[in-house]
Image (cartoon, rainbow, N blue to C red; front, side, top):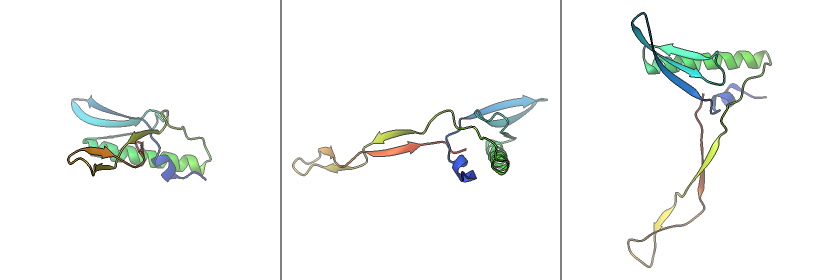
Length: 110
């Protein structure tokens, strides 16, 4: 069974907006793939916390009701980086890479 934690770890696309209403500025975070999920607040942190709470409520409800939950539009993309560098024993100051490349997964958690 898929869990809330699974959906929290998915790379959903988030949109951040600054809006004004009646002369008051506020922040808004939305999830593109699930437009009904948004969080607003007077600060970025407050808006993000409200968006996370709305996401958790939505996913929990959808799981309980056995409803489909949209998947992220963008896949998790692995990037390759060499993390091991060492000084070449024969020539002082020369750097050489050794060992396998490490795959890093970059995702934006919901």
